[in-house]
View 1: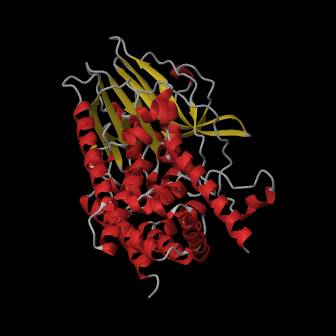
View 2: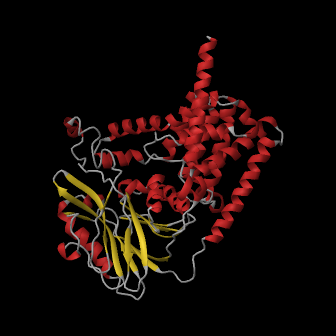
Length: 499
């Protein structure tokens, strides 16, 4: 079979996505990328790329079928149709990598650079519904992934394909030369760098802030039923009341849209709304709530309630989920809304927010919320960290995924925001998986999905900014993309002139 290596690579990579944050995920990711490099080296094929992409995504993200049905309100056949379109659309960046491979200088392969440059240049393109990357599967290899704080998580994808390409070249040529030695040297240096970074970010013995992430495990049916709006909020309030006043500074965090009674974003004190939780000495809140300025301005928001009861202006979610929080093109063609009447009509926020939680003893923590899938968007976490955020907090509701691997995949991708910016990432979810992720990407504690509880952890604030945060971001990958486009342009011109 002509495309067996593409299909086998897709199977292995798909399995890696089914085993997030494990050494098996690392193993299958390397195995899959080696077979992918073998396939690309022997036959760079667009159809092969489609086979790889469809196979990998169908295995790794099969749970999307039920999510599309639950979140969009579709029956099985439309859900399968949308899922199939997702598989095809998700394969487009892989086709771009094939396109670049055809025109980049073949001399790059002497150093095993041809495939990683073509692959990552395509991976940086904003063509994915969810920004999954090959390197995400290596999260368990903590020393290896710390290079993300230089040029972002794509650095890990590049290294993965760089090493795999070197091994593939060896398997094809049966020779140990610079095409293998170079990648192995870079791999060793990356592990050494990661080891030093892990030592650097060992937390001090005395940590200034205790966080309590509340997971009430409210079902989708109850959460969306107006009869349960008050009892749902009361459940979070009662759980939070179990956190008695303590001497240490305590930040209590609720997940996305716990309060569904349309809170006014203009209120500036907790006494203005009896539905809000009450702070106390050494105790403050960061909560998810729906807010409304008017019937036309509805927001998915995060409210900070400071120790003294003051409420700063809330953060409004900027990246809304299509078909759930809004219907694409409905603002231009209102009749489209009738195709999915269950879709919301939310407005996207425009500004990032850094909340300054200052306690009576003078301790302060600058905290930035990211709502739902915003924690898998590298640019947003980097921008709030540049604004001064010392702690990143994700408020989300992953109950839509049901009892699947999806919440753990979400957590795995989000963990790279912690590594890139060297910040604690606190992930507060309605039904799990609620986690505390340290600055090196390790999940130090968690609450199991579909359980009720409070996750308490002491953390420290970090003000130092990484090279990725302060300077580079993803600039190097956009630069490589421009190089690929340039060589592709020259190749097309040359090809047309020969006709």
